[in-house]
Length: 130
Image (cartoon, rainbow, N blue to C red; front, side):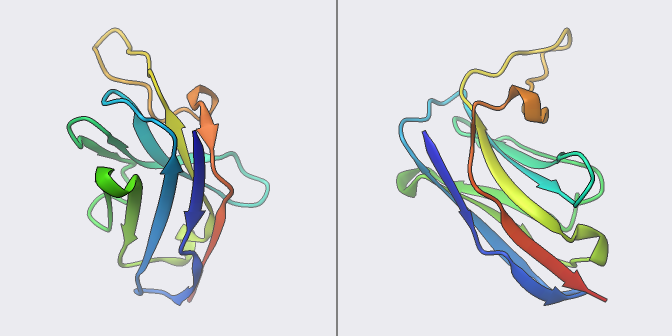
């Protein structure tokens, strides 16, 4: 599986961007595509995820209501629509895939741990000016 993220850029606070993640290779229904972001000197953090089979979506609290993750399985594309951008959203954004995520005691899938992802794309820079 190969992933390629694109769509980053410079935008003013309150603006919007749409990131795209192109996936090549076979992704099964149980797989997840997740977006992470990383600021210089900080750890990579989870942003959003979508499950291929049923399109279940998951967000970190700081972006809920502003970001929307979606997918087009026919095109093997995953999108991250980012509205209401804030300077704190400035980071390099990465898409990643986990093919067979494990589950915790409560049945929740592991889609938000960078160490658990199987494949990564190169990042795309998002800069939000105040």
